[in-house]
Amino acid sequence: MPKAREVKRRIRSVENTRQITKTMEMVATSKLKRATDRVRAAEPYSNALAGIVRSLYSPEFAEEFPLLRQPAEARRVAILLLTANRGLCGGFNANLIREARLLRERLVAEGRETELHIVGRKGVAFFRFRKVPLALARTDLGDVPSVQDAEGIVEPFRDRFSRGELDQVLMVSAEFRSALSTPPKVTELLPIRPAPGARPAESYLLSPDARVLLRRLLPAYLRNLVYKALVENAAAEQGARRTAMKNATDNAAEMLETLTRNYNRARQAQITQEIAEIVGGAEGLA
Image 1 (cartoon, rainbow, N blue to C red):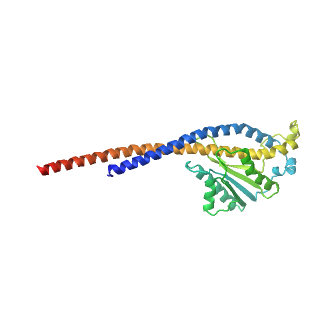
Image 2 (cartoon, rainbow, N blue to C red; image 1 turned 180 degrees about the vertical axis):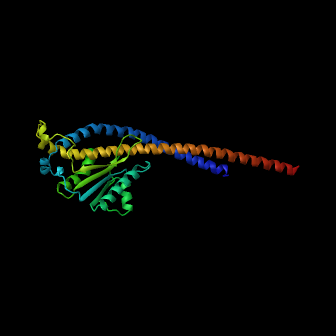
Image 3 (cartoon, rainbow, N blue to C red; image 1 turned 90 degrees about the vertical axis):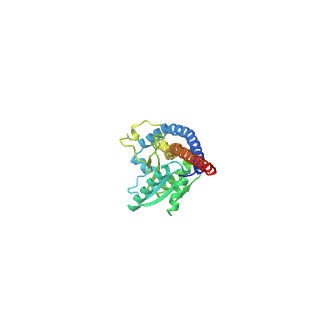
């Protein structure tokens, strides 16, 4: 049985750890509330914009607007992976990285020319360690992504797709269903597909006309897709971190209970031994 002093030292160490994890849980809870508000605020606009753009699609406009081009075969594919800059959030980053890795392996096996673009320190570190070439590696985004951040990410894809250098752009990010459910998902950024069963643009009375609307809305649509993914990722990260830190705090509490019992037993054994030594000494002097 370990000595009481050793158990006491372990108790202090676990108490310090529990204090840290509890603090991190509280910080994540606070950030999660604000991040969730941003997700909810972005959703109505994102859904409405997507519905309008997809409804305005027509084969005629696909020939006029490069962003509506529908390649016959996706030979050149870009994968955009969004991860967090920090860890201590359970399997959040690992799930996203695994989804992107499997997607890349499948595309390469199909003979497609695939390039990997990563936003987030954890994803960059994983693929660099495995010597995977990266076309983009950004680690400068914070906990509160902006529309400007989204524009900086999507603009190169938009330009390269318009020039015919890419046939497809896929984005791997987290889907924020709730603080406890944030599975990875794959979103096709480009090409922009028509909405299933949508009425043709000629069926609507539009002002300005559909061409003017598309010229203005197509860049905004792509920018908003990335922005919504960024805010969902931020909220999912904080939700995963809160859950991970709560589990760590609960585990520390259970460990403290076990260590406290062990300390009491060790202390009791030590006292018993001291009493036995005193009695033995007294008998020897008698």
